[in-house]
Structure formats: C-alpha cells, structure tokens
Length: 356
Image 1: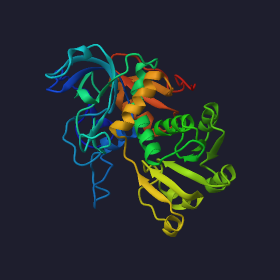
Image 2: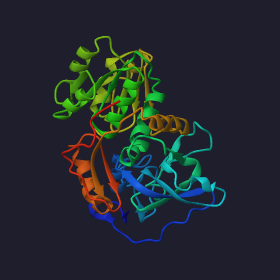
Image 3: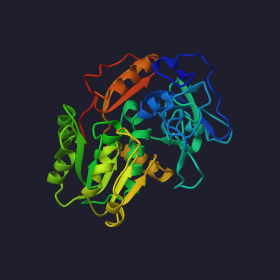
Image 4: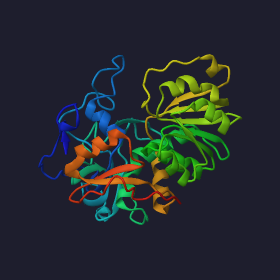
C-alpha cells in the first residue's frame, strides 16, 4: 500500500511488487501487524513543513521519494536474512525499531523514519537493518499489541527519559487518550509518577478505568482543573498538543519543571511569557522519538509483558485509507492496526482496555 504523492486518503494505492531482497546487514520481515500513527497522516499530507518554510509540503525530515510505502510500526517474523546476518534469526518473532539514526551510538537521535525516509510496513514484507530488529518471541503480547509499540511507546519513553521523570513526581499528560497519550500514562504510572491526564468526553471514563485518578476535561478550564488536581504544581509536562496549552500552561510548573513537547495537535505557532521560563529555571524540551537505548528498554518491557497496549480496531491492509480516515476522526481510544489478509474488527469495541 503506497502513497504516490501528498494528499488525502485517495493517494493510497494498492500495488503488486516483488518481495524485497534483504541486502548485507538486513533481514526480511513478514509483516503480521502494522500500527497506524499520526505520522502516517502527516507524512501522507506532507504536513511537517521545512526549516524556514512551515507551510511547505514535506515528509518527516524533508522531501519524500514517491512512491513510498507507509508504516513505521511493524511486528512479524523474520523470513530471510541478508549476507552477514545470522541465519538463526529466521522464524523469530520480532519488532522493528523504525528510526533512522544520526549515528551509530546508543544515544544517537533519530533523523528519519521507516514509512517516510524509507519504505515501511504497509505491505506483506519489509526489509530492515538487522541491528534494529528486536527478538520478542517470548513476549505474552499479541502481534497487534506489539505493533503498537515502536512509535507511540517509543516516543512516550523518549519523552519520559528526556524529561527525567522520577518516582513520586507529578506528570501532566496532554492528549492522554491517544496512542502516545495512553503510552505516556502507562509508562509514567509504571515509573511511580502521579499522573494528571487531559482528555475529553467519553474517553475520560476509559482513562479512569485504566487507573488514572486525576483526569482533566479539556472542554473546561484546563489550568483551573490542573491547579485543583496538583495544587503544588507539576514537575513534568508530557505534551503532544502544544498550541495554547504551552502558551498558557508554563505557570503550572513547579520550580525547575520540564515541559517536553513531541507533537503539535493544538498548533505549531506558540507564544509564551519567557520570564516564566528563566525566572523559574524551567525547561522546554523537544523530543521527536526515541534513541536506541530507549527502544531497547521498551523491548525489555514488552518481553516481560510489563505494559498492555490498547488496540481500538483492526483493518485489512487493503482498507488502509479507511483506517487512516478513522484515525483522523480521533473518536477511538488506543491504536488502530492493519494486517494483510485478515478481516476487520469494529472500532466501537476496543480489543483490550485492561492494564497490568
């Protein structure tokens, strides 16, 4: 399933192509499940802009070479290996780290993404560097659950690590019912943080079912509700919304607070009183995704089943456009997953709202 240009869901086209051949240092993965992300929508639309040209059509980090197979989040089994890769990997159940890194070190930052800067997992097969394929054969999670992890949970863990969230601190989480938001809630709670989550409507009840005691309704006065829930202030804000929330929210932080931004659902043009930043030793931190170190930590959690991703709906690969349309409506809780050759499950019935 490829995009042939930037545009709406109609630019997604089903195409028969040869099974890719893994090059030296690569593996071939038969895709069992591939999860959708907002990055899929924005890459298809070309909504990332460029330095100095915020309205320019662009992929994650620049122009895209079309046609492009989307899909960053892949779970499957190794079907073949390229030269220099141990044959023992064949048949292993794996999750692919989709990041393209700036260097070889464990803390290198991502500068590209599978599904944008290279072909991704909206397909029956995809190739990936062997060093970025993580063996999760023993994980109790399903393939669909594993596929939800790379971008959403990787982004969330990167935010938490860069924000230095510690046991006992208070974390304010925006967009808490989305894929990254739920990941932030689960990972922050697992770290021992006190979570204040921002959501709306029926999704508030789902978050409370997941054990979030303090849920703020974004339709009301957010700042007032946060002050009531965290009268001593917030240590770390984990934000995928930005916009007015960042503009108005800096005074909600404690001395030395950290505001970590990994999205702009509320708008990318932000203005705030810089005095609230330097007079209170606060920090605003950008966090695009994860590092190799973060991703390895995430995969260890997956092997133990220490996190329980929420799957909202599944679609066959041929219905990728419909799945993206549902993602754009933002009426679901959790993640939407595609897989080749299987029937869809209804969006109104989330697969798993439980937690561990």
